[in-house]
Image (cartoon, rainbow, N blue to C red; front, top):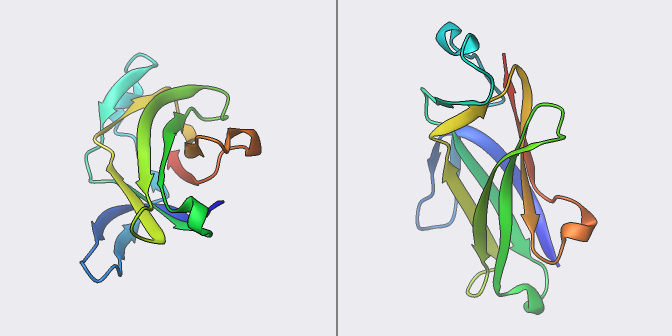
Length: 138
């Protein structure tokens, strides 16, 4: 079974060839600019500072050494509504550890609160979402 090691949001990531990783300025909250607070709900707004979502997964057994498909979901505050959904792949064919990195260019604004990013891998949906990172919008 694939193991979720960690998922974080940061403003910069360095992933050198030696497979070490530097996550710079871990992000847990952003301040929504006043000009966006008065826009209609469900408006896509640009993210002014770079925000990277970085997730690390490990193949625990030989049978896990394959490409795992899934989705990354952006959940609205309260967690009841999926705002965005992106297909993803974690490739563990030639390595035990796989990292997924995604630069967040914009975000759908539906109000202040905590948005969550959920990783759901195919074949594991019945176990619930796997990786998770939270971003408080205030």
